Amino acid sequence: MDLLLALGEQKYAEEQPLHYAATKDDATLFRRLLQKPGLRADIDGDPGSGHDCLQTAIFNGNKEIAEALVTLPLSEFDWTRHPMAAHGAISYLASAATLGRFDIFKIMADTGNVDIFEGDSLGKTQLHHVSDVPIGQTLSILSTTRALSR
Image 1: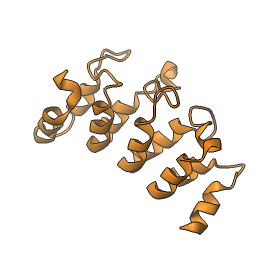
Image 2: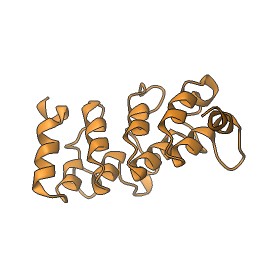
Image 3: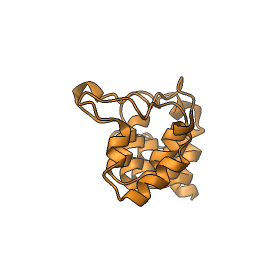
Image 4: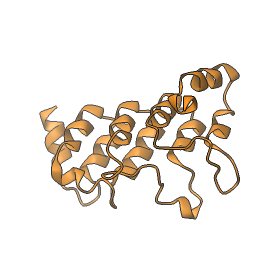
């Protein structure tokens, strides 16, 4: 683990340390790196930012990395606004639903920082994407999501 941490702390020109940990699907290394002030200060910025890390965590189904990011204060990392949304990118919540990462969807919805009823440019809500899964899973998600009880 110490070797991985040392590798993760190096400033590679091609990959930022937090993104390196996310792509390696290493939640322990990611959490340790996230505690480094210099790395955390850049979390809402460019190359290998938290946005790239969150998308990678969703794609890989790594709920520990996703949770570490979405539970940060929005003043440090505003994951509720996708930087590419103006260019047609779907939200992280919709990505999680579309990819079937419902544990991550639930973590994000339960933060209370997103409106799961808000429509995108096509009028589709975040729940629209959840409706593409079998009804049993959909009901399970809906019945346990705190955002619905507000």
